[in-house]
Length: 396
Image (cartoon, rainbow, N blue to C red):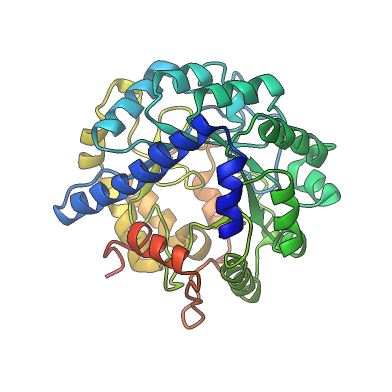
């Protein structure tokens, strides 16, 4: 942790660092506190929002849930501006910007300029980050690129469905480093890359390239090319969790996960209501890979009213918490299908085969493995997770 703090004092642009500490750090903590107070009063509005701004992408990854349409769907700037403004009224100022590849949305930087008091985590494959784009993000100060890396050179090309992806991604990373951004890397850990990416050497390589945080996901077999053979086994999930906990002690960067609390108990952010997702058509979904919806923000609806009246989202949260502390789409796709049919939710994937995909899914191990919990050993991570990332009573 000390090495990371030293890096943060010297590597990022000072204005970038100030906005990161205030708009992401302090205001993010306040957003969780306000969310918890709302939950205690029986009111619901998530602490964070994720927006997929377009379904267009320049890659074709295994396990990707996004189906590209022609012409591409995209949220217009006016709609996104309204959503973000309504979230800020509730004390929420942190937004995950996803795709497809979000940098293919031509109005994206207009949105960032409109909300200098908000903080945007840009989920990108990094191949489109030029020096000019990185320089504009430095000028803004409120955008942190989170660049996905899916394996070594050969594995990455297979996972991403294109050529020279690893090298092109590293060029994008170098532009971020050169422009003194605070930026991260993300990886969806699966059987083909766990031995390469869940290692100290990988962490140290990224730190040497200027990366400040690393976010580990667990691969989920969803979408039109689910590749279930890549799903981690129970032993591999436990090994990944153990690696993350141990790596946090001395890593020269922040190691992020969104699956476990301070005691090592599994958690699902969508199930406890910390975050929901808006897709490129304006559909409000439980989370990005669960592509079913009954609500849409394109008609001018106030987001607070939408969340207050949405029985589908409320019933999803209740079902997900009652069925497991893990990922319902991995563990119980049958229950998710039953909910979708009972509520008459629309397939929002653009493929018109969402329930059939659930039928074809076999149950898989997710992060919920009772009896094998591994608590945080780092006091800093333990404190942060205990106070700002826990179950909020949702699991009873």
